[in-house]
Length: 327
Image (cartoon, rainbow, N blue to C red; front, side, top):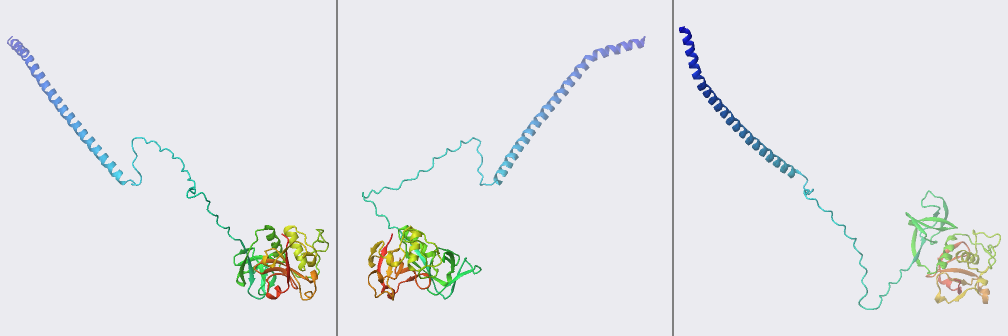
């Protein structure tokens, strides 16, 4: 009985104490929760600060890195702008200014005189100069030239002058030749006739050689361009170069064309001479030779040996009769 009363009393006491303990426990729990919340807030705040500091530090490092990278770029490349740039407009091509008009006066300025044109010739300076088929000593020899022999220059290859020889192109070594010039004619036909004469330089002289034609244009059988006398040479080059018909011998040719005074000689005129066997005759019977005038006392003709260019001497001028112009 007594134990029962003691148990009841204990239970009553426990019942009275339980609310108080619950209140204390709740209070402790709230304080603990408050402290934990405070600690969480504090930790959260510190974490945010740390993150902010880290972010700032990373941004600062990133900016610093970008600056360092920027400073290491090629300075020749300009930085790109964030704003788009419009492409530059294409400028119109510059206009050419017209030459200024002559405002000083209404007079036109005189034109400069045209430059004179010349043709070159070579004169062999040694004896027995080889005339070759090509520009080199490995080419065959077409013939040889004695000292003073002259040829027209039609080109040059290295140290070799290109010329004509016996109806062929040929070459003479420049070390064995000197050069001189004569003024060309403004008449193309004249130059064409002379060029035909150049081609025949070196061709042998044969008295009475068969003519190209009969004087009226009819071609003659038996003609060859490998031999000429003086009048057949003139007939041939005028026909080939300018389609002009000359008669078959000098005494017939001298009455053709236009008479020219000696003082008015021009390149391309034909000069007629006498010779030792005819100088004592009269009239046209005195005529015994013809040559083509090149200018500056030079002539192209054939006489006793082969077709050649030479300068007229005083003794040659003594045989002069008259000149004729056919072009």
